[in-house]
Image (cartoon, rainbow, N blue to C red):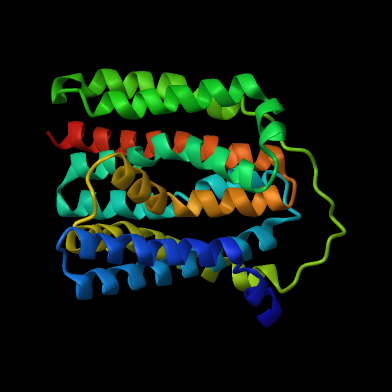
Length: 280
C-alpha cells in the first residue's frame, strides 16, 4: 500500500501544486492581496488536491476489475456536489444548492480534452462514440447554462426538459466492455474503497470554499484567466479520474466518467428545484 500511495502522486500533481502556489501568491503580490492568507489558502488547496489525487487512484484501483468503471466513477466524483446540495437544502438556500452542481458542466469537457492531450489519447477520445459524447456534453452544458437565465416561474419547464433529455442519455449510453478479471489488486478493495470514497467526498466538498478563500485574499484576477483557473480547481476530481482512466487506456470509461458526471449534475439540480417547488 505504501508503494501504491507513493506512485499515486505524479509529476503533474507536483506541477499543479506549484502552479497553485505561484498563481495565488503571485496574485496577492501583484494585486495588493493578503500574502499571508493567500499562502494559507494555496497550501489548503494543495492539501485538498493531494487527498483527492490519492482517493481517486485508490478508487480506480479498487474498481479496475469492475465492468462499468466509467459510470461508477462518474457517480462517485459527484459525491461532493451531492453533499453541497444536501447542505444547501438543510440551510434553506435551495436555489444555490441546485445551481452548485451545474457549474462544472462547462469545464468538464475541456478537462477531458486536456487529460486526453496529456495522456496522448486525444485521437482515441475524438474517435470513440463521437455522436453520443457530443450530444451529451452539449445538451448538459446548455441545460446548465439556461438555468442561470430563468426566472422561478420557468423552473417547472426546465425541470421537465432536463429529465426528458438526460434520462434517455443515461440509459442509452455506450456499454463498457468486460475488463480483465485476472488483474491482481495492490491491496484489499473491500477494505480501502469505502474510506477512499468518504475521503474524496469530504475533500471535494471543501475544495470549493478553500479555493474561494484563496481567491478572495489573493485578489485573483476576475477575468478569463481567473475563471479558468478556479473552474479547473473545483473540477479537479473529474480531471484526476479522467487522467487515471486514460493512463490505463480505458478510453470509453474516461468519456463516460465525464458524461455521467454531467448528467448527474443535472439530476442533482432537479432534486434541488423539485424541493424548491414543493416547499414554495
